[in-house]
Structure formats: structure tokens, C-alpha cells
Image (cartoon, rainbow, N blue to C red; front, top):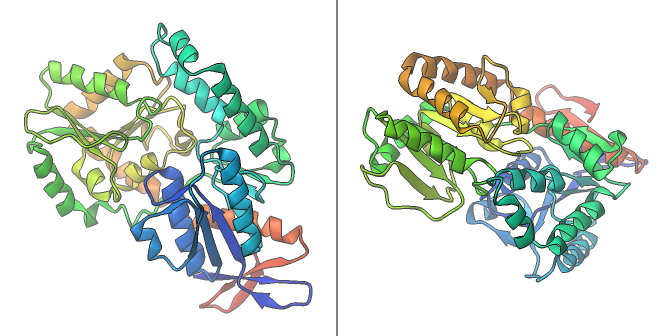
Length: 403
């Protein structure tokens, strides 16, 4: 395992001090899970990690990092002010913002482009409702979103991390970020954590608790913003297949509160789930029909869990896939195509198994080690610009190199 140290102009070495800024450090969403895993990974490699946020989960409190809790604030401007004060007290070598503030060295928006996200959220509604939505979401609110994005992406001194080529293009065309400031770092997945062989028993137990029969084909969808991630489209497809008499059921994770499971229920909602591994192990097919997603962690976790995956080109994770690994649809709103795809998977056990094996193989090439190492390379750029060096050492081999 590599360990990192920072060397100044005198040659003095010390642990690099990294400040991660996230609203909630609790693993409940993509940015939160990413922040937790990155913080743990950096700490294991010799970094002095400080996390700044408003809340911290019980699991995160056990990590070997220092958490700095910000006071509750009513406005974003107040949150930014409190975050800056915390950063000044920590005096980190690198500040890494997960998309919640402004003025850090590295800006990493886990929603991707807020403007592209807003446009996709409009498209996720029926055409007749979009004008009503624009009225209900006042022009003032939309201008506020645009103004905040302009401040966040307009900080010329910050490096911006994009998680897909499409996301990088959005940063340039919609936010005016120069390509020279953008670093492409797709998400990775811990394939061992989501190894299906480790969670087979837990998955079977969850199927029983949810009332799924042995011959039910369980489709899993994971989303907090369920409309943006296409869950209503997925629900319509599953109910259509049920109407045809196919034993298809839907397991929804995230977003709304849990619903009581029942053998007669076609849709089971688990609400927020802290550890998704057993949920993937309980499923037969994973579907992420996103209207917009920077680079879905749920998609990568589904791959690692050995599930056949269906997603859309609006999901940045689709750039990491080939037709052999997953099924990628062109139009997130196309219920008929999604229904036909699920019909084929639901009725062809061999196809599900074949795609699942291919998905697992692909996930093994998309590990967090490469993703987080690329993040450290971005840190190295920031540190080098200040006249220092970020040096890594292979503890086993005793070799040093500049990160």
C-alpha cells in the first residue's frame, strides 16, 4: 500500500493535511458515500484528513479522521462563511469541496452540472406539466441556482473534477469552465465490498422479509431524487409486465419512507438504506433509467454485485460500459423500450446470468484504487503549485516517487 507525505522546499516531510467539505458526512447519498470512502482511503495512506460538514453519521464517527461540525445555517451564504472559518482554523494543504461551497482548491460537484441537472429534471416530467413546473419553481429560485453555480464554477483558481466526458462538456458549455481547469476522474467501486458471494445469505433473507417468492424476478432501483433518476418510468414498466402476468417485482431504495412489504405487493420501498450490499444481493436485475446522472455509484455497485444492468446514456457511468457489460438505452422517457428490455431479461434466465458475469468482470476494472489515486494526483497539482511535493512510498518495496 502506498503512503503519502508532503515535502517542502527544505526537504522536511510530514503528512499532507486534506480538508474535505461535504454537507452531510453520513453515507446517505452519492456525495456522502464517496466522501466517507475517500476519507477512509486517504487516512489509511498516511494523510491527516479533516472533514467539514453539518452532520456526521455513527459509522463515520469511527473513521480515523477529524470531523468539524458546522452550526446549522439558514442560508447558503452563511454555510459558506462558516466553512471558510473552519478551513482557516485547520490550515490544510488541500481543500476538496464535494459541491457544497465555494473557494476551495478542488471543486467536485457530485451532481455534475446544476444547470444540466435542472434541465433534465424538467424533462423528467410530462410535457403538459413542464410549464406548470416552471411557474411553481419560480424564476427567482432558478436564478438563485444559476448564480450559485456561477460562483462555484467561476473560481478561476480551483480545479474542477468531472466524472464523465459529457459532464466535462457541460462544465465548459453551460458554466464556462476552461478545459484546462477540468480533470476527468470517473467514480470507482469497491468490488470486494459488493462481492455477491459475500452477501448471498443476506440477500436471501431480505427477499423473504420483503415477501418475494423464489420465482419472482426482482428489479432494483436506487435513487433519492426518484423522478430525476427515472423511477416513475421504471415503475410503469414493471407494472406493465405484471399486467402481462410476468412475476416481476420492484425493490426501491432511497428517497421516500419505507413501505410495509407484502407478498401481494408489486413494489417494495425500503427508504434510505445505509448498506446496499444485501439489497443488490436480493435482486435479479438493476435498472437506473436516469434523465441525468454525473456518474452513478449505484450503477457501479450493481455491476460489482454481478447484476445485469440497464441504464441510459444520460448516466455518466454509461461511458465506462460496453454492450457486453450492460444495456444502455438512448431515451430515459421511453417506457416501451425499457419494458421490452425488462421483458427479455425477466424471461431469459441465461441472459441475466451472462450479463451479470460480464458486469462483475467489468467492475473489477473500475476499482476505487485507481479513482482515488487520480484524486491524489489532482492534490499533487495543487501542492506543486505552492512549491511543495506530494511524495508516495510503497511501504513494502521502500520506493519513493512524486504523486
